[in-house]
Image 1 (cartoon, one colour):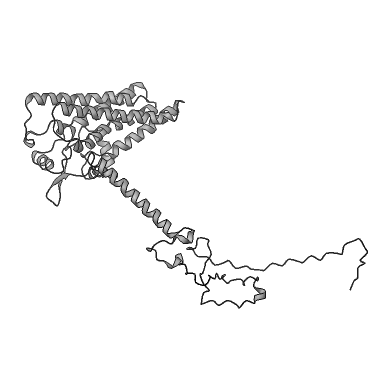
Image 2 (image 1 turned 135 degrees about the horizontal axis):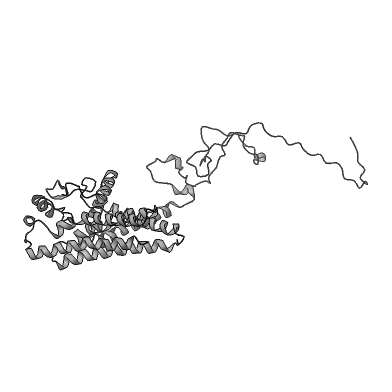
Amino acid sequence: MAYYNTNSHSPPPLQHPVPTHPAYIPEPPSTPMSPQGYQRYTSTPPTQPYPQQIPSQSHMAPPYGSAPAYHQPLGASPQSHPSAMGPNGPVDFSAWGLDNATAAFGMQLGQSAVAAGSDYVQKNLGGFIPISNLKHHFNVSNSFVIRKLRLLLFPWRHRPWSRQVVRLENGQSEWAAPREDLNSPDLYIPLMAIVTYILLAALHSGLNARFHPEILGITASKALAVVLLDFLFVKSGCYLLNIPGGLSSQVLDVLAYDGYKFVGVIVTLIAGLLGVGRTLYLLIFLYTFLATAFFLVRPLSLPPAQVSAANTGNGQLRSLRSMVLPDASATAAAVNPSQRSRRITFLFLVAVSQIVYMGVLVRV
């Protein structure tokens, strides 16, 4: 044994331990239901006994491959584990650090808010625009959209123009849904056409190096103003000419016919973006205007028996032509020659006014 001089000022040499690493460390067990990724137990699992720990060696870690045991104080109620609950059972929020009572109260409050909002919409808008009618106008399919766009752009040789009527189980009749009837007005195409028009207007402004975020709002406001102005013009004419029909049963169909003009506007804007030239651009604009005007005033009236059956049903609107000039055998009051002449003039004004609306919309 070496003895060092205690009077020497040099410190004794240090002996550093050499670190040793195990060859393989197994991964701790994990379960997908545990938020922390480790499997937890409220008590010691009966199937896996733990080695008896000596009190003096309580600080030693358990061997590899064994799960740690978490003991609860005496008298504490055991907590349920999320994995023990079925997929359709109540959610245990305590595993995520939330109080079950507070979480349940929050979910109940959210459901109450959604129910209150639905009741508010039904009470305030249900009398003006029935929700069933709104769903009816959005009941479309992909094939209907394609065929309807073709009809809007090429309405010259379309046959027939009559709308289909379906009979319900209670004996009443109503108009067929748009997906079942090509002549039925819908709101899907007008809504998508307005959105596409706004995007094309922004693209046109960007290509001309004058894009600004405000252009989106300005274009949307202009589109809505045109639709509202056209709607008020049609409704005012119907009121002045004493054309029967309630507002709640007509507003959706009138809005649908007012929105179809955006299809022709989109075609004109695309022609302008392609740089087809001013002459061809004007010809395309004139063609889309004539197609839209012809589609709006085309006689879409039903046969007298079907019109009477539909009018006694849920009271939905017919087309513009059949609304302004209904069939004589399907109405209680006959239209005299002077009234018919005024209504034909009104239809002509509705058709001609489309060139003004479309002219305003194509100026982006």
